[in-house]
Length: 492
Image (cartoon, rainbow, N blue to C red; front, side, top):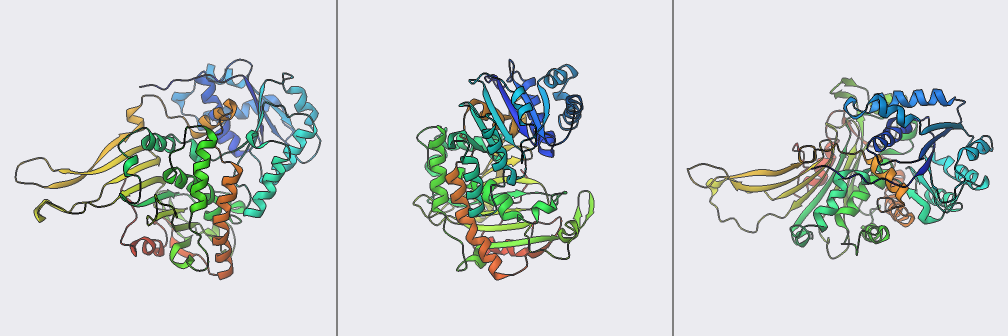
C-alpha cells in the first residue's frame, strides 16, 4: 500500500532563522523530501534568512551537508539534491531593524496571487519585530501566512503579548501556530480510529474507559538547550502544548466535519473543561522532578544542575499530572500525564485503559484476566496495539493469555513515513490550519497551566530528585498507584 502524493500550488517559503538548528535539522530536510516526492512543483522557492553575512553558494553547501546528515541515504540521490538546491537561496536580513529587507523584497515574486509563507524559526522575542518589518516593507499579501514555533510565551500574559504583536500584522486565519506532534502519522490516526470505525466511539466514555495515560519520555538531557530550558521546564516545554493537544484529541467530541474550526472548537471545549489544579489540590495532582547523575545507553551522565553549570535550580525536568475533565463523557476518568528528560527510554504513547469485565465466568485455573488496553505509539516505531484476552492454544482446558493485535505502520505501509514537518509545511502552503493551534486554544491552555506554575513558585519546594535512566521520581509512581493503577511501561 503506497501513499498518494498531491502537488501543492507554487509557493515561496521565507525561513527566518534559516541558518539555525531547526532549519538544518528539520525544515530543509522536510522540504527536500517533499520536493523529491514531487509535491513541490513549478517555480516554488525556499528563501533562507538570517543576520549572518553568507553567500548563496555557502548556504547551499550547508544545506547539502544538512541533507546528507539528516536524510537517510536510501531517501536521497545526487540528482534530487541538486534539483532541490536550485530552489534554495539566501538573504541576510536584520529582523530587529531595517537592513536587508529591500534585498529580500527584490527576491520575492511580484505576483500577489503567489502563496507566500513566513516561517519564524527564531527566538519568540523576534516574532513581533519580524512581523512588523514584513508589514512595514510591504511583504504581506492576501496569500501570505506566518508560522510561529513554541514557546508562545512563558505564561498567559506573555503569550498575549506575542499573539498581539503577530496579530497586529497578520489576521488570525493567516497565523499557523505549529506543534509538530500534531503532524505525526499516529496522532492523526487517532482521529481515524475514533471517528472512522464503529468499534471504538460507542465505548469512548466514562462507562467503558477506566483511565487514560499520555507519556512523552526522552532519554536525552537538555542537549545544549540549558539556557532556554532553565527558564521553561517540562510543564511549559511539553505539557502546555504537546501533551495538552494530545489530551484534546483523545477527549474531544466528534466535530461536525474535518473543517479546521470545527475540530479546533471541540479541542477548545476540552481545555475549558479541565478541572483547575491549584493550592487546594496540587500536592495530590502533580509531581515534579529533576534528574540527578546516572547512566544512559551512552554511559554515565551528569545531573541537570551540572549540565546547566549551576549550583542549583528549581526547574523541573520531569512532571506527572493527574488531569480531570468536568463533562458528561469523562466525569470520573483520570488522565495521567507525564513527561521528562533522562528517562529510561525514548517513547511517546497514549494508553486507553478500558474497564475490567464485571464478572469472570472462568475458573482460577484459567489465569488472571487483564483489562483491555489500546496503546497508540507515537514514537519510535509508530503503531497501534489493542491488547485482548484470548485462549492459549492447545489441549488441557481453558488458559487465558493477554496478547496484542499489532499494527506497525512501517510493516503495514510500504511507503516511508513522512516526518511531521513534511506534512505540516505542506498544510501551511495549502492553507489548511486544522493541525495548528488557534489563539483561543493557546489562551485556554495557559489558563490551566498558570495556576500550577504560580502554586509551585509560591511553595518554594525543590523538584524531587530522580536518577538518570529511570522512570522519574518515586512520587510519580505513588501518584497513580494510590488510585489502584500503574504506569504502562510494556514495550510496544
